[in-house]
Length: 222
Image 1 (tube, rainbow, N blue to C red):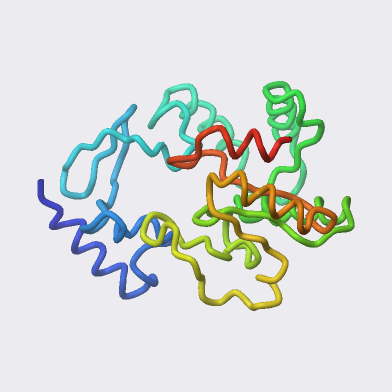
Image 2: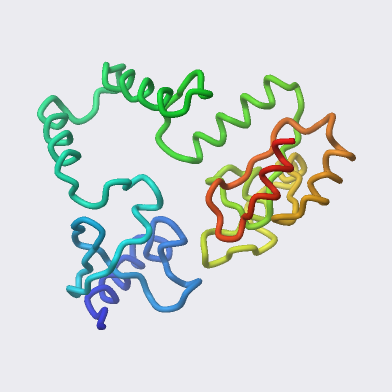
């Protein structure tokens, strides 16, 4: 397998994009080599600029539930594009989407749609702090929750730095509101609540992590 064209595209990208990618995990530094530059996808497969074919186990990091170029999705996109691309105003479709989400997850009483995971976690923590009147948030080492300053404590950045303890650029004042615990340590979680329970507004954990197990989620819920 050759990636000559992808390597050339990476070199070109590095001249205008920091690291040549727009998300650190895409750089492939954690697994070696360089990233393939994708030109198209079909079903469960993607194809790079060198013509190599890959089975896509990533699925655009989660949202690509039906694979690439799924006909009903393509048709729906065409229909929407015929009416416009962006309005900056409410539409009926966003109501329909919120209703579909609530139907799928009945415990979710209300839905606010945002543009990124970072915005979602920022909003969730603000709500938790506002409702509880508390400031501290518990997270787990190596878990990534977007570019929220207080959550970049012991987060690393993608597979390239998974589990690295410190992240540059986070002011100490922000880090002071975050309790970062070892992943999958129920005893550490219990100790944190024993010592700071009255000041903890929320516990945040990545829902899909390689070696999560059930123990941490069960303990957090209890």
